[in-house]
Length: 333
Length: 212
Image 1 (cartoon, each protein chain N blue to C red):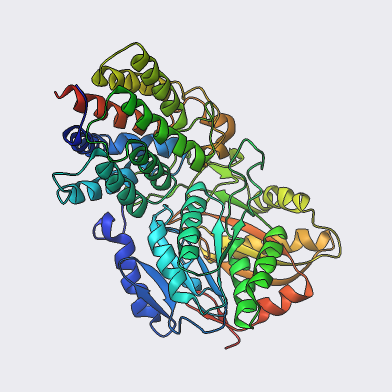
Image 2: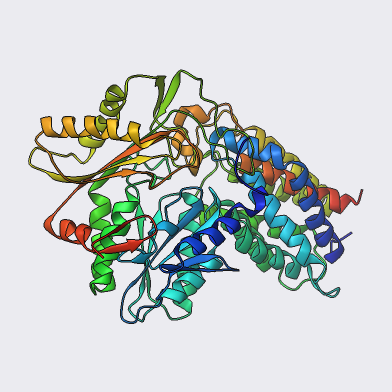
């Protein structure tokens, strides 16, 4: 294992120190328990938006704390959901009297810990509502699984819902909006290589040099199928097919597209992928109104990407364009 | 001979030790069908438990020690195993109340409550390829041993043996809960890490009761 770390046990804590040093104008890092809040928290009268999950997916979620997006982010250990205590403390730190929304990706650990934290925060008099994000089309949603995973589409939810809360939407309205964005976004990932979790020290899974895993999860959990490496246009087509047929997306739809790097893939490759996404959507009469390309929801140094497509309505477009000032996403302000 | 606080704290210390010893094995099992953090997370949790155990009052009841484990695991482990094992110990503590000595039926009540807590939180059933596949046979074996008039140590031994068999029996199963469920058929042939750690924890309970 080659990594720029000191001790695997200190990876999260030391990265939080650096995050605060880099973005002290936007956010503050609270220690013991560890969470990240926007520098002006709590904002009175505004619904607090809290998300979180295992570390190792940077900039998700800490990079999205700030004006117009998250009020707080709670990082767990690498690839491990946070425990309830920091979630409760973060919830209290951002409660401006209008209640708090928890945005939770659909992983058993995240759901259980946020659920427990919400109950504890409620017991302290804070109104908490939760929305579970499950945008990953790679896994079949059935009563026999834990349901679809929440992956990179979470970025769209956090941006749009954060903007609504910033503009003064009440808790019920932001819950409805979060559910609506989640219902309209679909994502599929692909891995070219595995990542190495620092405390494990070995690759998360074994993938032969000439094979790729389609439908990979955020933690290196395998997805749908393993195939031989193909040109990126072919890979994009294989990823878009289940995305577009799932919602389903139709001619005349207006969409936002996120081509998300998993951490180890350079932008030059992501742009090639976006090029193909644009071609396919144009052929199908789907208008790409907004695009994001880059590392937004990563899996450490894994090579690969995910493609998310969000069907937009007028309100979502306005909120997407609204000002945002976070470490990893800034415009209009 | 009934079991008291000495057994409880000995069980906890042996658990921390055995989890530390099997940390890499549990990481490897989890790496195969999950995300590879199970051993690391439990090791972090039980290391934190050990640090707090010395602060436990000598007059504490077994239930107090179990509650200490519960709150420490919930606040240090994270993931799915933190809430699941945390709930198990919390329910186990509730089942034994403030009793200073646990007889056979109390031991069975402790194990049953732990299992029921996990089922309640995780909503998994036998056959889903989860820790329930180790806990439920353990509870059944403990109840049978108790009905047969066995000693507390024999009851725990029966539970530990059944848990180990249950953990091994998860290998051919398709996972239906947790992260491994995303694998479908590809989870077949791999042992569930939560079932394996359950077997280790219950073996530690039996070893502590036998006192060797």
